[in-house]
Image (cartoon, rainbow, N blue to C red; front, side, top):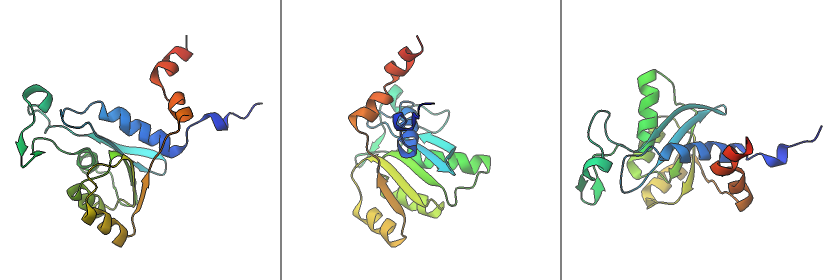
Length: 164
């Protein structure tokens, strides 16, 4: 039997792909962000940036900007942690996969929630104090990268056509 292990994306890419897909649900016009919280290689929660449930969305009425920031939007990381809180799922010892480096407020929230590793895809206004806090608290930070071959493997069109 042939070993197809080399044809699979690794765990980090697998979870980051899920976070990226989740970002497509974002309702913010400025930036689409997705986050997945994982423990023991199992997704325990996910979130994307958007308005409070039942409120108007940025895609419907535009962003509500104060000092250059959309205050209508709840960040993806916070939505994922809040989902855990709502459902009674512990975040202590878990890791997060988020499409963009967390802002300072989300970094502090993730630390308080017991997240032990932050995986991100893109740098986005990386706050220097957030980076210092993560180092001081000895939180693992990893930027997830995809090679062109990896991107071919997760091309949705190719996956869907493979079953034809």
